[in-house]
Length: 115
Length: 115
Image (cartoon, rainbow over all chains, first blue to last red; front, side, top):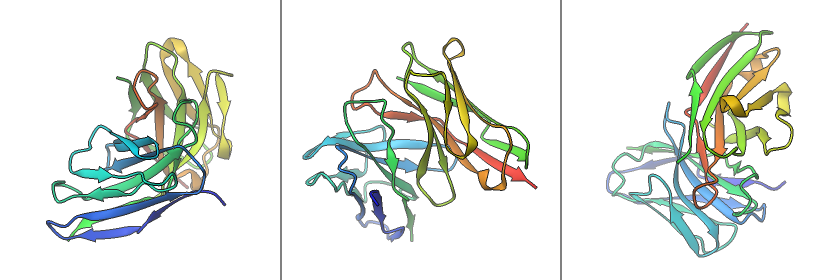
């Protein structure tokens, strides 16, 4: 079955470390997104990519970086500059970057905690 | 920029009772609207979407929503709650006025179902 795979499901980071969250999709979708979810705050967009080798900052990009070298992969790096990284991170994809009537499809998330 | 307001961060219903979750959006142009459900430690699953066809939209698991342009609302209902409906629900709108066809999410409503 097609879908979005996020790994790992749980991740722990020490202070000053960079960590990378994986997101892979086999839906052949053009657009991919990273969200951060905190209790009571809904989802906030970190970065998004509409095409390979291109990506744009979302609403809370500071302290994060991404790459989109392959259509199916959109890894997120949480850098040491992100002062409050503890959160639930969700990756999503959409078939087309153009048609906004299409829904986004979500992975099962990665929960990041600081040791 | 678009905004989405979900009235009530927590809703408690008895099993068999009506479920009503409220969603209001701000937009000068009728947008595309979505309802998602999230179970603990999982990603978001699409319940239904409004894309300018019928104003009453039926989704999965017995849920439906009605788009009311005059009230800028897209409330979600289910006639009879089941224990398995206990989850968090998010309303989202496609931001037609922003680059990247991004989704703007409401803050979510957590539903508790009492036996």
